[in-house]
Structure formats: C-alpha cells, structure tokens
Amino acid sequence: MKVKVIGGKNNFWLWTKKDGFDLTHPANPGSPLIYPRITVNTRAEKATIDPSKTALVVIDMQNYFLSPLLGRPSESPGLDIVDKLVKNVVPVCRKAGIPVVWLGWGVKDGDLDDIPPSIARGFDFPLDKNFVKPTFLGSIGAEIGRAKCEDGTLIDAGRVMMRDQWNTEFHPNLKKIAEPQDIRINKNRLSGFWGGTGIEDALRRRGIRTLLFAGENTDQCVAGTIRDAYTKGCDCLMLSDACATTSPEFTRKCIEYNYEGGWGFVLSCKDLADGVDAIDRGTQNV
Image (cartoon, rainbow, N blue to C red; front, side):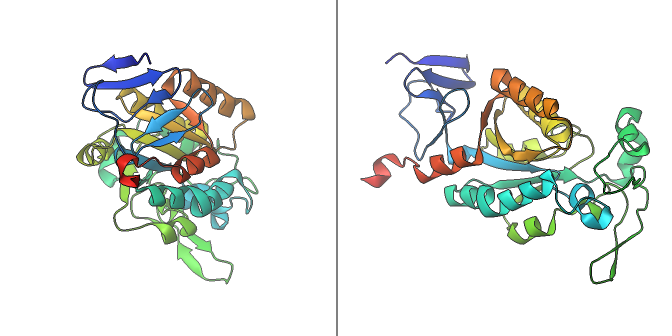
C-alpha cells in the first residue's frame, strides 16, 4: 500500500487511499503505528488522531456572549452548544483521555493601552445584535454594572472582557464540568494564539499537536484561533455542530469551506463520538 508523506521531516502526516490521513505524528514515516488511535470520518476523508497528542479547545463560551442576565436571548445557538458540550463533546473527550482547553477573553489592565482600534471598535459601537433588545454593554474595560438574577438578587457583572470578572466566566453549566487538570487560557484578541497567551507553551509541554475546536462566534474568534493554529503547524479539526454564530449563514459556510479546503478537517460531534467508541488500542486488546 503506497504511503504519501505530507509535510516536512519535523511535522508530517501520512496518507493512504485506504485509510485517509494519519495525524498521529510518529517519529518517522516508517515507524510502527501509534496506539491507541482514533479514526474519525470527516467531510473530506477519514482522519486518525493520537488522543495523547490531542486537545479539545472550547472558545469564548462566556457569560458575556451567552447570559440572559446581560440581555442575551434565553434560546440561542450558543446555548445549544453549551448543552452539546455538557452532554456529548466534553464527556467523549474525557472518555478518550483528551484534555480540555477553556480559551476565552480575559484582558489585563496592562493590555488596555495596546488594544488596537480595530479590536476596540467591535465593543465601542453596537455592532453586536445578539440581544433581546438593543443593548450596549460598554467598551473593553468599562464597568457593566449589576445584573439581576431570576430570584431578584444582583451580581456584579464586572468590567467588559477583563480577566477574573463574572462576564468573562464560562457559562455556569460548563464551569460545573470543568476539572482541575483542564487548561484555562486568557486572550485579548480574537485569536487565542496571538500575543503570548501561553496556549502554545501549554500545548507543547503536553506534547499536543492536534486540536479539536468548539465554541462561540464561528466566523470570528473560532475562525481567528483556527487560522493562527493552522499557520503555526497544528492539526485542526472543527466540530461543526459544536460551533455557533449569530452571523448570517453564509459566514459559517465560508469558514467551513476554507476549513475543508486547507485549514484542516470538518466533522460532527457524532463523528467524534463514533471514533472514540471504536478506539483502536492495538496490541493492548490482545
């Protein structure tokens, strides 16, 4: 069976007509197969990953973007993704031993002077329409004020997009399933791979080279993170039905088209779950 080597000697995939893409990153193209290995169906071809070199990256599933306490709808694509992450994606990854990275906005005071106008504009003007009624929460760093809970109690929503604030906490249902060994990364741009966030060091220390992506704002922060991860040499697999946006449908199609065409691979949550259920442990099963 003819094996095609894709990439350079320090970072390569293997491909065969029968088995599709092998993203397990053996020491060299002739090395024995790596086990355990998970093969998933993608929209292009099958792809095989090494769970010990893989992480799930969950992007921007934060109160600022999701909470009805800030005027967001009580039913939204983002909240649907919360449910899917809780019931499906995260448990599937835990089962396979795939670590979870919680990546979200968390600006420091020292960052504010260097926030470019192109980023600030998205918060300074009411471009975000995903509210029950027109709402302006303020510029980056501005005090949001108090948010009223259903029982009438008030909570301090904190400063817009700043680190360690209620508005930048992950959705409560996601906080419940977070575990101490999970990786939490703060960012101050759309991309989690920009500006020394620490994600590259965290992944490198764990030997992670393959990333599964889920999260909020498919065409913005998810896409921005994916593009940078792809450029830096990571294997990128997008869980299409675990990524949400309130932008027009053509934006999602554009991102997925580019993903399939070069950035990586597109698959569904079921594709991942089926692959994990059929994990190949090689001689460990003998």
